[in-house]
Amino acid sequence: MDMIADPISVSLFEMRLEEIYHRDPVLKYQVSLRDFIALFPVKSKNDKLLKPEPPASIVLDRDIFLQILVAFNQSFA
Image (cartoon, rainbow, N blue to C red; front, side):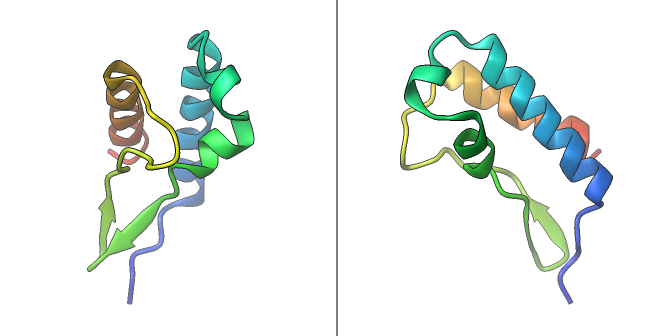
């Protein structure tokens, strides 16, 4: 049975993604907010949450991706 992420933690992660999206002046020209959040679904394997991976569909700045990983770790710590 796969671990199901806590819905509150998932919402917190999505809120943090939204903050990252709004802080970056370029993202809005690359992708919509809804699509940006959808790039980082919360997945699990063998009862462990999988960290987000860089999306193949858009090129993200390394700093932005690091912010996403920090947001993930803070949301699911």
